[in-house]
Length: 175
Image 1 (cartoon, rainbow, N blue to C red):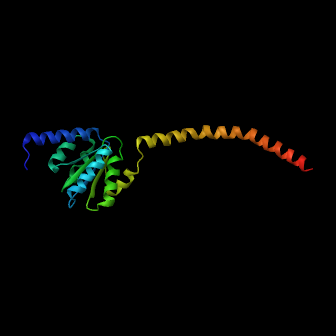
Image 2 (spheres, rainbow, N blue to C red):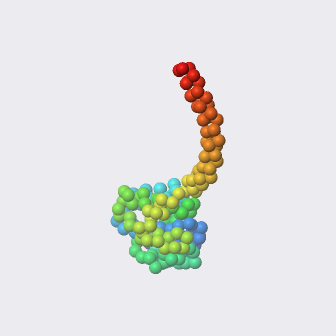
Image 3 (cartoon, one colour):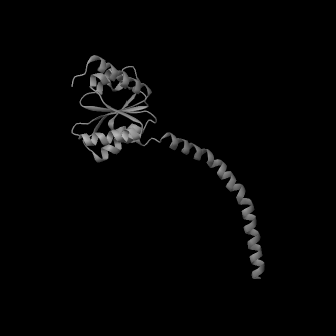
């Protein structure tokens, strides 16, 4: 089904708007995937707030032009599905990585974060990035550690005194 000029412009505008707001992008070749498998991938992407779209490569090149993902333009060849992370940088990578475990026909071709083009092997590192909630939790645990250590140290002084008095009492009772 051929698209007319207005439809093409609408697709380019939609993808460009998403690309301007996205933190990271993954492009993967979907050759050989069934419709059911792609539907499952789209369902997982929606759950994780990942924008997933199959776009003609010429339209995709125009859409990412002028965004942080312009570095991907040269690699947009073949049947590709684009995944953009809208909330946290690792979301698209996690969705694609989890999907690739069960479907080896999805082949990662491009990975981009904040205007830097990474290799397909860097998908794993991007997927391991903590979410916002995990990062805040890790920061809070680091901030809490010195206070917790101080409190346990201060609590140890009366505890040691009580143990010493108990040991003296036990020694007198034994004698």
